Structures are given as C-alpha cells and as structure tokens.
Length: 124
Image (tube, rainbow, N blue to C red; front, side, top):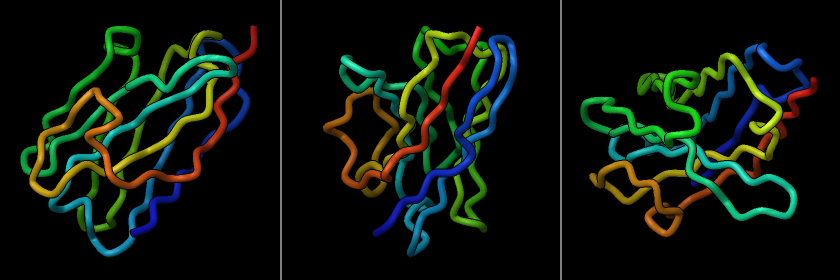
C-alpha cells in the first residue's frame, strides 16, 4: 500500500492550498482516510478524516470551518482544501489510511498506512 501526498507549498496568511493524497490498490474505497500534521518541535496532530462509506467528515477544532476534506473513490484520491490559512497551520501534512471498514478517527494509532508528507508553509 502506498500513499502519496501532493499540493503543499508556500502561501500567505489568508490564502488557500489544496492537498491531494493518491492511494494505491483502491484502498480508500473500504478504509477511512485521515489527514494529520506535524510542526517542528511538536507532536503529530489530527486535522481531518473522511469515512469510507458515506464520506462523513471529521475535523479538529483548529481547522473546522476553514478546511474541507473530500474523496474521489474512482480516482483513489482524497483531498484537503485549506482556506483562510494561518501561520499556525505551517507543518508537514500527512495522509493516512485507517483500518478496513473502520470509522475515521482523530487518533494516529487507528491508522495503518502513511504517506511521506507534503510541506505547507504559511507566511505573514
């Protein structure tokens, strides 16, 4: 199983970025998908999750209302639209796939496979 993130970059505060995560083997059709981030010197933080069955989304309090997670099962891709970005959103962003037929979770130990990450930097 491979997960590959793309779409990171440098953006000014208030701007937008769209991240994508492409999975191999069609795994997203039967697994919840999550987005996490890790800033330098900090632990890994849950950002958003997407249910495999109905696309129900789960968000952390820090991004709710600004970020939107979506999935395209036909393309084995999960997206994270990030709007109104803040400097506090600067981090390496990772996508992860959860356990088969499981629910999206805010806990990293509920995810089995991880991508290599894509850097998001928000400047003033």
